[in-house]
Amino acid sequence: MARGFGDLEAVVMDRLWDRDGATTVREIFEDMLREREIAYTTVMSTMDNLHHKGWLSRERDGKAYLYWPTMTREQHGAALMREALDAGGQSDRVLAHFLDQISDDESKALRRVLRRLGSKRARSGKGAR
Amino acid sequence: MSIAICLLLYAASVCVVAPRLLPPLTSRGSAPLAAVAVWLIVLVSVLASWAAAAGSFIAYVALTWTRPDPPAMGACFAALRSAAAGQHGVRTQIGLWLMAMVVGGVTVALAARIGRSLLRARASSRRHSRSAHIIGRRVAGVDGLVLDAPQKMAYCLGGRPTTIVITTAAIATLEPPHIDAVLAHERAHLAGRHHLLLAATRALAASLPRVRLFTVAETEIAGLLEMCADDTAARRHGAAALLAAILALACPDPIPSAALGANTVGVCARVTRLTDPDTAAARIRARFLLAAVTVAIVFGPLVVWAAVHSLSPFGLTPCGPF
Image (cartoon, rainbow over all chains, first blue to last red; front, side, top):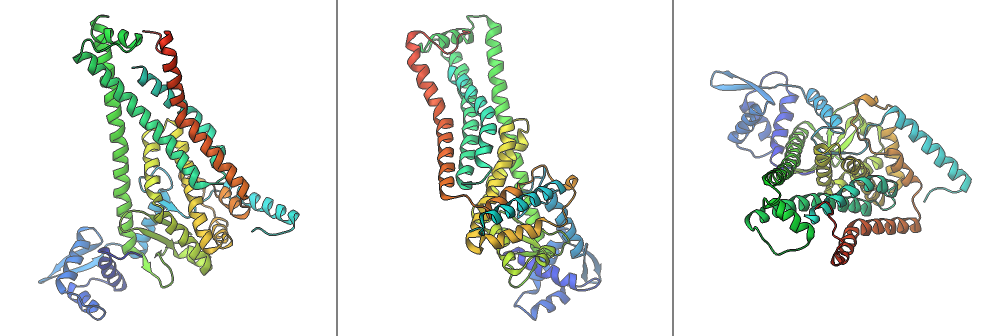
């Protein structure tokens, strides 16, 4: 999987989603420092970006900001799924689904195809290649 | 002028004939890659004819304006030139000029519409992709982003970075070899740059929904690209694994039709060709037919043009009204 510039945002969001309530940049920084070499300012600017992109809310607490996720991971996931499902239709997004969600009619047609193939194979007396 | 008319007639006949003639040849997926190529050739030849017709018409009107007496090229040219140069009255002249402006305007507007649609698609894919990279989890052994969701889904997005998303529900349904087959299918889409073709055909169909050729081409090409990706995945992981994955993801809980987009890619056709693959002879026949159709569509107008030219010395010009 390609890992790039967005990767750090993903790591920071992971940590924020794992915690309950508001967190300072310092806490996240110290948390991350245990696993990788990273500068405090990098974490700070990443969280600032995430705030501007709408992923995090923040509130001033003395000298520092307290950050917390605007939505849970599940809520974001549900929104993303809605987008992805919609993309099969008139949406602008270009995604290639492994399988378009199929309707009842198509599901019936599919079962018919399978039955037909099954009986054909039984008649010819051997399996498919 | 006669060139513009011939090009328009050609484009119109392709628009009528191709969406009826091609689907029966291509939708079985005997040679999906060749079929995609044929569809693209047809689309490009129609668009190019339109652009060339508009260009030659505008150029003609402009030329007759600046050069009142260009070398004579035929009866109809002379007639039209005299009309454009005002010998048929100012009204005809103004009419021609207005027509040229309308043709130019429509061409530019159409190009802008398609361009906007492409840009919008790119921006929203990118947004979706970035969100997926933040929300999705990296799971060992799964070469894709895993999303917690109750829908059994897998999809990919082009652009940078490329993204493959698979839901936890899909992973729970599939056995590990089947997951590999699904991911190989998605990787084949990305490696083949299928998203670019999809974006182009979608923009075309969305910009000109009334032209049946474009809407049919969009659906057909989307289906054929699925088959291309199926073939790549089946070569790597076996048709059986891929088929099992399709059936596991397709069968039990279909989503109501109302929630779906207009174009659902034929699952049945995909399943049929995986379980009951074509013989080599059938594949060769399909390729031969496709090649014949392509030659007819691309070289047909050249033959017509040559015929018209060989007739014109005998006084048969193609534009009688003038």
